[in-house]
Image (tube, rainbow, N blue to C red; front, side, top):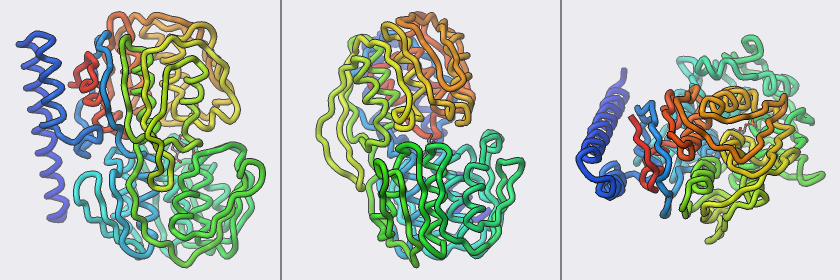
Length: 494
Ligand code: S3P
């Protein structure tokens, strides 16, 4: 182990140790004071002593269990950590750009740290000013001495595969047991059409990628996936001629926006700009960006505010890219009291503050392009749908079955354990509401969005909930529990 690695390990241990101590002190204070005083202390201790706002301190939480009681109204102003999709892309693009990139409000979470580790293994020089502020000197990637471990990060592995396909050295891309179960043929098929030399294990990872000359292709994607689109576009930078992808729906377009900002020749054509062409490029310019707040993390706070009585929350600086705002549109149609203010632009993305108030909701039908624009938000939508009057019907969402978990089956099973009645469908689900959850113990299944959705469900369950296997919340939202507690939620993380 290098001195640098030892120092990082020691720092990690110290941060975790002091965080644990502080939270134990908070809990002891809570038990020896009135509830009112406890809340005052929690509000002041968490932000000042843990001190890093919603982004946490960049160290994955050791808290693996959330205990939630209903009734704590959620109020005040909060921020959410930087966008996960943009954070993955930022460090990868910085690694292949020529020169020094500056990245602020980067998401220091389980998934993105895995990607950062991979580009470090590939020779990028990373200067970490603090957990969320990085300078990266790119341009000179070299072969990694060991397989690149992307842990649970599907975005990290699939996008990096596109970049690795175009390098003149071999690489092995691998991840956790969970990531090994996820389909990779969706990227290896088009990359092989470009001439990439990739071996995969039973259609999954590890992927063994050997150097090969890439050619430009025109590819009609069978599914609307930003990971597939991005892997092809990134490989396209190394082709011998332009590459065109045609997507069947509006998958998130962060790769396109960022490549354009770094000088790539990238254009959108066809119906709704669904045909994207990128030309090969000698070298990308370095980045200088502040990552906007993650709309998918904000989604948990939004639904928590909607279903918890007397809530009035403002989530500041949220990414409002139209390829990510399907949930806002759906909640608006369901009757949610949500308003936007301070609309602005940051890192080439629209941003704004989102205010949410407790609302009466009604069920609606969701399918088609809206599904693509909120693909990560269905677990938390289920929680909102349980509170809505009438039928909520989701179709065209089969992709949910190949996320970190089968999110239709897992959410339906866990919400049933809290007392819900949910009809699973092959490509979605049907929920008749309003339903009143009783409560109980549920499991996060090492899937961040499942663990956080179940936590929010617990806020409206009559007897509350215990969510186990909840540390995975830190894969995308470090400080999730602290953020909810600071807003007034009755919960503790142990
Ligand atoms: C992502 C794309 C989506 C999404 C994932 C992040 C990205 O996956 O579910 O959380 O950053 O490109 P798919 O491309 O598989 O739909």
